[in-house]
Structure formats: structure tokens, C-alpha cells
Image (cartoon, rainbow over all chains, first blue to last red; front, top):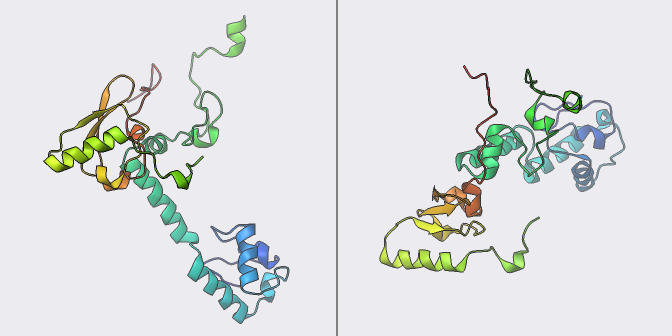
Amino acid sequence: MPRIAGIDVPNDKQVWVALTYIHGIGPHLSKQILKEAQINDTIKAKELTDDELSRISGILDRNYVVEGQLRRQVGQNIARLKEIACYRGLRHRRGLPVRGQSTQSNARTRKGPRKTVAGKKGVKEMRG
Amino acid sequence: MGRSLRKGPFVDEKLFKKVTKQEEVGNRDPIKTWARRCTIVPEFVGYTFLVHNGKIFNKVYITEDMVGHKLGEFSPTRTFRGHSGGKRK
């Protein structure tokens, strides 16, 4: 199994799919990279030669931020928002949606599993 | 949606003038303002603003990190302290 960008070991999928297993690389970037490295993006990842591998990792090193470094960057950006106590930072602190979404209902991705409140009237009871 | 680059950042002119005037005199009194929509520019760093939130003026000390944000982002307009009967220990 080829190793690209540190610990990533994509399998015997087509190269352009295998590359998307790297954090920070989606389908679009993946195809762009392979084009730049002049590799046919439909060959299997295991068929990559050492030379082709080094060309890919060379391009990654030079032009893109991926994996741990990217995660750190994102974390730092959020930490900065929290630090200066701006509106977005406050939303991050409270674990609520940051981009102005409605929170009366839904917003479960940010808020996590529902916390049911005992004794709270449901819609059915209020109708009766 | 971002603002057109052609126009540059929006800075409240009256507020900006007030800051430059203070710069000349060299005092750093808090500046009371309603201009929440005003972008924070590098010239504002080190000043304290009292930013209106519709009710009161919140003290905002400008640091370098805040450049590029709007003044209003630092003066929350809503109060929510949690639901009643919270089971806080």
C-alpha cells in the first residue's frame, strides 16, 4: 500500500479516489494534483511507481496544507475567534451554529443529541 | 456574502475622524459609538470603544486580532442565560 502525506495509506481504488482519503483533499483537488503530476487518474493506487508517488507528495508539500497541519490551522482559527470574543467565537464556545442558522428547531449537528426536559409540554398535550 | 473589493472596507467616517483626532492629542479615552457596522481598521488598535448594543454600551478594547471584524461583533445584542430550572450542580 502506498504512503502519501505521512500516515495515509489508500488502497486499491483508482488513484484519484485514493487521494481523497487524505484530509484536506477532495475530488476536485485530487484530479488537479494528478493532472499536474501527469498521472492517469484512473489507474489503481497500488500501480503507482515510486517516482509517481514522490511527484505527488512533492506537489502536496509545495502547494497544499493537508492532514495534521490543516487540522491545526482550523483549530487555531477557531481558537482565535474564541479568544477575541466576537460573535462567531461566542457561538463556537456555546456549541451553537455559527453562521446564523435558526436554532428554534433542528441545529442538531452543533447541539448534539436532544436533552429532553421533564415536564415540558409537547405539541399533542397543548392541543388537547 | 462578502463585500466588493473595489469599494474597500466600510469604515464609519465620523468615527474614524474621531480616532485620528484623538491620535493627535494622544489620549485614549473610550469612544462611545453606535457604529456597529464599522469595520475595525489597524488604526483602531489600542483604543477602547463603547459599542452600543441597542440598550447599553459594551466596552471593547481593540487588539490586533480584531482587525477586519466589525465593531458590532463584539457587543452581543441578545441575552440568554439558559432555560429555567436548569439542573446546575
